Amino acid sequence: MSGAAVRIGVGARFIYDGEVVEVVEMLSTAAGNEVVLRNATTQQVVRVSLREMLASDRARVVPVGPGPSADDPEELASVLLAELTDPARQQMLDRAAHVLEVLTGYRSGMAELSTVNEPRPEFDPCLPLTARYSAKAAELDVTMRTVQQWVSAFQRNGEAGLIGRKPVARNWSSVGLTSGG
Image (cartoon, rainbow, N blue to C red; front, side):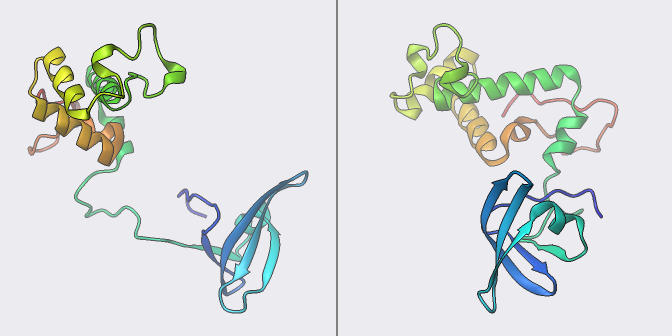
């Protein structure tokens, strides 16, 4: 068994006992989680314990798309985040809070975790996004384009998108952030 993880839910496909099946329902029972599988060929339905299915050699996940590869143009977020120094990690987290404030009005990204005086008037979610970009740029003394690049990178790759990368040989002892966008 590998250490890889896969999300299992309705729509997940497996090879189960040599047949292609799809999860059509998930159930939580007193005995544990169960899945209802539909055979892709015969349309026959069977209910199976999720634990039993995954622990046996009877099932293999059919990937929806290719997984990470050694020749991917971008590194895995977990690798990038693990390499950060404490100051670089804090800078990335601060930048993420700024991006979330632009997008949602809240530095945490949600009203339920808001601090006093959030959302600030200049980041009210009712305002046009360009107005919020402009306000954040003025607050941080950067260009509006820099804020837009941070937002775009965050939307594509989460917090890992906010890590500045320099196109030089990697120094494994200290990985940090670039100052721009």
